[in-house]
Image (cartoon, rainbow, N blue to C red; front, side, top):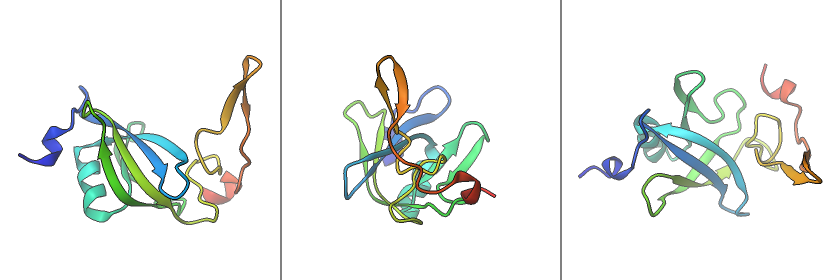
Length: 129
């Protein structure tokens, strides 16, 4: 049996993926993969996602240079969520979010409102030209 067959793909052939920084344990981002993206990630040792908005593979860092080196690929107990243990490359400290922040999870619910608590490390205008 192919290891990809053990993944429970949703009706669109996708599986949710969490990228976690290996060194710090920080949750960097959430994305989706199709079968080809997961296979390419395992083959290349670099995160390849599936962009639902573009309808195609998205090699993390292809525009920004903020590549994710993959150290380990894990599957949850229900076989329907993938966890990538990564090192975020391309900037120090690593930038995983298109907003120029370290993590996509930069807003905290405080007093009934979402408040950004993590700094922008690099202006997104200078990342995506």
